[in-house]
Image (cartoon, rainbow, N blue to C red; front, side, top):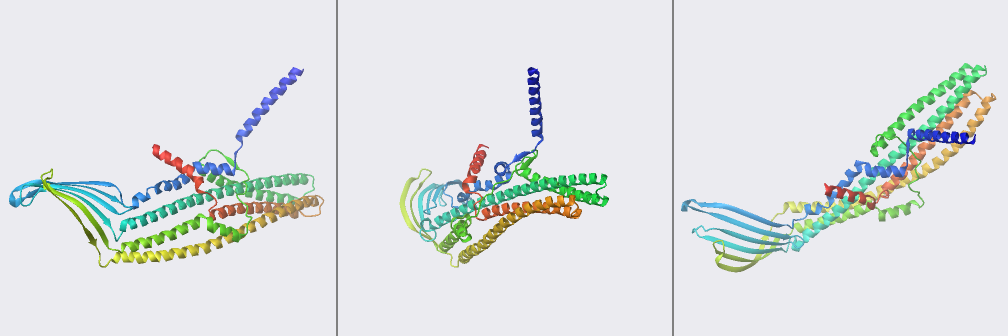
Length: 475
């Protein structure tokens, strides 16, 4: 007998296990807020598209600064002297090198060809050094350009992080919307179920001649209203789920959200918060760099107004044939001057750069006051939502008590059915209202962190950038 009971228990255990396994497979997978963000940042190609701009930045200096390449140029032509009824080849080879940060230019020239006055071959070898001493004196303009491009790269790098942060805020907001739609769906399902129970109770009371047909029809109408609302909530939730699946690039798995933890809590006074924001934020770092860049542009445009004066020195060898036979050697030094007398374009660029510098200072000032007002209003909105959530919770507690009392009062005939139905609707309205403010509060916190450049840090996205670099190098 004990053996039989033991076997039956084992069989029941396996049946129960199989049933539970089958049930769990049919249920949606829970997706936490943290897991969602991690999946989105690794799977969503929108992020990869943003990060690709970071890979381009390392080439900006090579594109904008003067080339420091060693340049070899070769020219070969055949010259025909028609009046002398003769011809000969003419060859020119030049090797040049520029040192941008000093402005120094080196050139080595070799030329061989027939003379105009005779058929003999003449050759020439010259080594020349040119050093600017006015415009771009000793590479000053190039060094200014290097600083300008460096600031442009830093600003662009900050802006890439901001674009990353903006999109991250968008997907976080999508999760909160999804979470709110899910909570509303649960409320709608519970409300429909509770009102369906009320309808079953009213139908039973009608059979017992306790409830009037009009009361049954009122409850039927109430149930249909709840069913209609539930249908809308289901459609809205599925739309939100579709967005979540697209973001994480998983269109087949059905998920349900979990209640996310709060991203931050505001504990300091607003003026103290804004003081830290002004000194530490990415936004004001960008504005400061843009001001510095505009000042450098003014200095570089002022340098372009100077005449082009080069000190030149060199060594030259003249000879016969390709091997420089019977050569003559001499050293030369001098100055090459190029001075446009009007400089219409350069003067216009200089004046415009000064205006641009003044404009950038005004942009910084205006941005300061605009962000101050934005953050201050956001601070007040967050405080408002905090209070409204607390009020909504208190209203829900009271609505539950009223519904319980109205249910009892209706059973004793102390109140009408309309009062009882109204108590149902008031509880639902307060539940929906609480979810509305809760989701809005969380979205405001995301915006609060985004505006203060605290939603993402540079080191957060660097692993992904490095991974993309490795992937591009391997291809």
